Image (cartoon, rainbow, N blue to C red):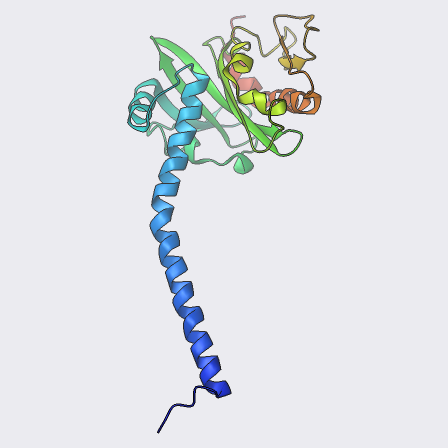
Amino acid sequence: MKLNTNSNTYTIVYASAVVIVVAFLLAFVSQVLEGPSKANERIDKKKQILSALNIRGLDNEQVEAEYAKVVSADCIIDSKGSVVEDGTDKDQNGFTVDSKDITPDYLPLYICQINGATKYVIPLSGKGLWGSIWGYIALNEDGNTVFGAYFGHQSETAGLGARISDLDFQEQFKGKKVMSDDGSIALKVVKKGQVKEPDFECDGISGATLTMNGVTAMFTECIAQYHAFLASKQQP
């Protein structure tokens, strides 16, 4: 019996078969690409953490080796400063926590060693003018002095807010204090040329006021959750 290729039944069966084959191929390609994509995301995250520790310009293999060398733990703590997970695997605990999953009872904290000195790296996330901004801030053993910082953005304006990713903007945070004597989060970005409290304030980027406000809000909201832990590291 000759197949009637003009019938509705043939058309439906043929279309269904094509859809099934295409869906299978897409699922296969997605699965094949998922591994490399996740690996690249992990490498990029480690690069950002290392950048906050003033370790930059490494290739992927160097990133893995340096991260394993300087990061002692990716622990999880709560807002009281108590350890929830010790993170001794270095990238299996706090490292795996997405910014949207961070809560006062589930705070990633990286404990690092740089030339024999302990550093604490805190993840940051917030909103800029057009989209998400994020970063990491590394603090000295006193829990208050900035050792280094890294910032990234999703879609801030090129030449303006996007410059939070520039090294010269990030470098000025070194040596600043995050908390004032009363324990409040005092680290902030102000309009360029209007720094009045140099221990806590950094020059902003001209023409990017809303992004700068977002960076300051990111400090206030994110670092405040670690207040109990950081306060415990400060000398009376």
